[in-house]
Image 1 (tube, rainbow, N blue to C red):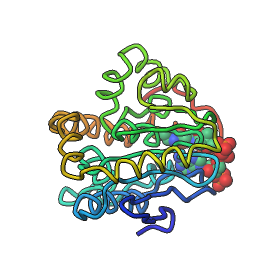
Image 2: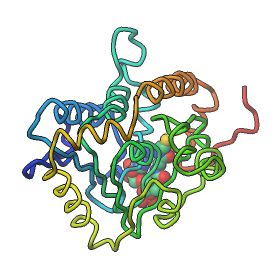
Image 3: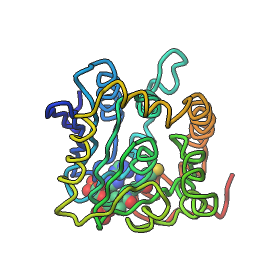
Amino acid sequence: MSEHISVSRDGGVLRLTFNRTEKKNAITVAMYKALADGLIEADRDDSVRVVLFDAEGEIYSAGNDIADFMAGDPARDDPHATPEVVRFLEAIATAETPLVAAVQGPAVGVGVTMLLHCDLVYAAEAATFHTPFVDLALVPEAASSLLLPRVAGYQRAAEMLLLGKKINAARAREFGFVNDVVAGGALAETAYEAAQALAAKAPRALVLSKRLAKGDPAEVLKHMREEGAHFAAQLKSPEFMEAGAAFLQKRKPDFSNPS
Ligand code: COA
């Protein structure tokens, strides 16, 4: 449980809501744990037919908490423990329960890459999508370096993953990872109606159809682990220390003298 992820239930829909508005819904280790637990429980509990992700405040999520990145997850260095972020990413990549997301504002980093695993993604006109991994001296995660080129095409993916360009909701729809862009006031209802419509469908047929459409998750998990190894190494690199310190000190990083 995390006070920063609100969990609520309406019929067959389990709603997981980012609720850390004072830090722009940046995701901490405790929040990853709550998200992973929610997804795993949803797959175990037949009465949960759909998971709906949404967020309080104006920002969907500022991505991984950068202070947490710098402090590290104690589990990351324990060969016998699975870091909570990995539990979350594996749970979302292998979820059998259909996943719907309502993105009301800016999404950054894992706030974007998690959407590549959702089945239906709705965005408000105010939503933006930004994956500045390279700007933080990191590499893409959540298998986004596999899934984004697949859904958007290589050059469009490069625009987001290499150049770190922030795109708006209309462009995200063109890229293919947003189903529909709606006025801000209509977002909650649009996403909720879609979630309830899925929840009312024949559950076995729905889960089987999702499995058939997604295919074997082995390739995605393998790619995610490869990204994860580079990501973990980069977190210990001098270039990341510079990028992380620059973020916290609200200044531009200086990569002119990499050691
Ligand atoms: N991790 C930790 N803290 C974060 C954060 C993050 N990813 N994103 C924002 N915050 C914190 C800020 O440090 C600030 O804290 P403070 O009030 O104690 O100084 C607070 O949230 C407000 O952030 P601020 O940048 O002032 O808000 P904004 O509305 O001007 O901008 C964002 C919102 C999301 C556009 C901006 O915060 C941002 O770009 N964040 C970093 C996103 C990022 O690089 N994530 C990692 C991707 S891999």
